[in-house]
Length: 113
Length: 118
Image (tube, rainbow over all chains, first blue to last red; front, side):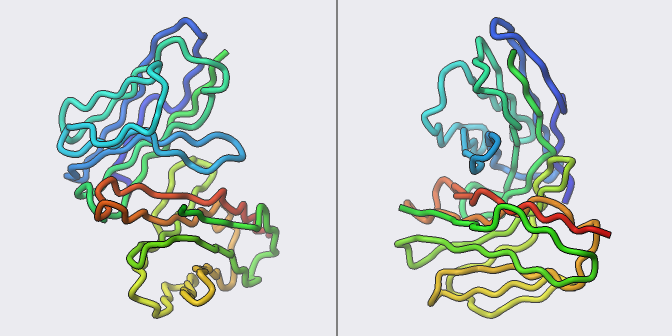
């Protein structure tokens, strides 16, 4: 399935910038996820939303702020990031929050200078 | 603690060769799910298979096959007659089942980069 889209695909930002990543799913799913993929490290779950409510926050620094205005859209607002935040940020969705296969978007490759 | 190990960092094969990607997992749960995803250079993680802990039957889908062995905590993935389009990073993942799977949290391995040469 290729029903999860992410924009932008690439982003370069300075440490003082504010930017947002957008994810949209066209699968009619009710749960959405943000993951971070850094080089040489396993994918790390950042946030989980179910029916637009945040149900998981994996000790993510406050410079990352998620927003889920409806079940089809998920944002990740970025503010005063650090160079070590450079990574591929992947969005995923699943039919429901529980015990469901997650389908991923293509990711946003972020570079923080 | 739950953990997924993919000991093979990189594998290079020539087209038409068979290749097996290893995955070993650790969990104390009796109920769990295992997954394989493919990540081509475009970045998107493509879902390949999901298997629950009560179903040890091996599965075949075209050139892909999976061997699930609870006795060795392994869930290996074999590609038969590999093709250049199979070149990608392959991830094995385990779904935690604490709190009844409430968070649907996937624990990923570090991935195996498969390069299929023409």
